Amino acid sequence: MRLRENTALYKTLRRIKGGYWRLRLRLRNVKPSCHFAGASLVSPDLVAGEHLFMGRGCSIGPKVQMGNYVMLGPEVSITGSDHRIDKVGIPMIFAGRPELPETVIGSDVWLGRGSLIMAGVSIGDGAVVAAQSVVTKSVPPYAIVAGVPAKIIRMRFDKEDQQRHSRVLSGELINGEFCGPK
Image 1 (cartoon, rainbow, N blue to C red):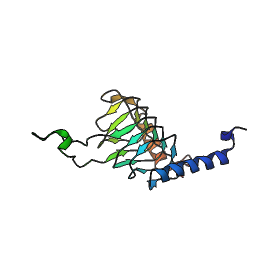
Image 2 (cartoon, rainbow, N blue to C red):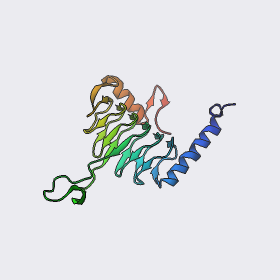
Image 3 (cartoon, rainbow, N blue to C red):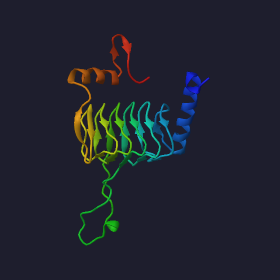
């Protein structure tokens, strides 16, 4: 019998693995339902909601918040804006660092393989960032962005479907059923 066919055992082992990575990386503000596919460099102040999936080799800097159902492909980086380049007469290596801005990733966001998210941007609920994209500006909810620098390719849903999906993400009842984080 395959492991994934035994749902209870699979979920238990997945929680144990997630707990191991949470302890190893000292992640106090990450929910137990997180899943790490492999080793990553993650700042211990990461705040993440339910069902975070982080691919192997990610690099997550300080002051990052993520909502529920966020997926990070392998080698995603959230970093940058951390060197002073505006001081005349002082080499950059000695110029110090500015206050790092907060980076906010909404719920149900997918960051594709190797994408680079610059510190201080916000990515709205339901957004998709294509692989190898560089996000230098905030991304609106439900936008699909790609490129260097990332630009909006199209919207994931029309306005009506965006509202319906937002209600699901907030945990409202849809057609009499509870939808949202448990």
